[in-house]
Length: 366
Image (cartoon, rainbow, N blue to C red):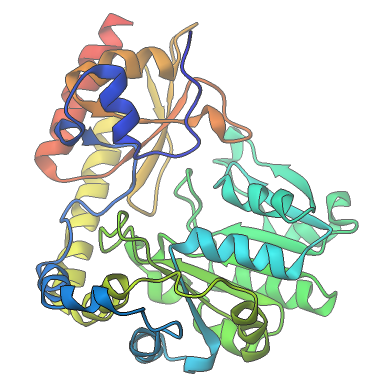
């Protein structure tokens, strides 16, 4: 029986079972995690605070909120911390309960899942390959799909396409939607990897705007996917509503102290931005030159690709790469993408070179 398409990347346990390899032996290009690994400063603070595990964690995440407040420049009262960004996406859908939400596809699947789990309806707006999977935000108010919409989800930079919108575009949509009582949720999980992130992010604006919520993840940039840590910024009233409806102690002690240490590690942040700037250019150039592949420009740490071979699909490519210890992200679970699409993370130069070599070999076999 053919395995079901995975909704997310990074499932090394399932891959180990399928390909009969040790889970840690894979080079995982299916998950968009910083290849520099967990910062040394974070590892140190986790070890130093292991004794905290006998105590309940601070339900208010006060130290981490204060560190985030200083980093983002918003009041502590406008910040909520969660067990990864996904927890917060499900929380806000459950609290706000939109009857109908508009989702710009192809994009992260959890937005729609969260709305459906909260009893709402999902309206999908698909972008085409011909536009580079770009949605014109200024045209959205005139779309018939906007009828009855109470919430809009926007992934910026978008996953899996790697495209971004400008601050002006996003805030323009935020102003229009707020005036009509529509919530705009902007997911900036990968914004830290964007070169001009400071000119594109809107997270600070969310603290003073009604019906604008911006979520962030610390698991990608700081390589903390297994620890789970995310946060969101919104108006004080909105944060109070969310906090009142959440489960207690969802953010453990080690995640809280790790977050504080990560925010303080400026050297790690600088090294990460130096790495991604160089490797993004390298991978864009090399992948675009591989025969049998179509690629799209990216502004973050992953790239969307398509196999240009008749009757050849991502599952066929993964079947060749898996036994060789490489994982890629099947794109067919993203609405608007077919079984010939896949996404790859941008990793270290030796790992990237290995992927490029194996892709050339595998495509020659298909």
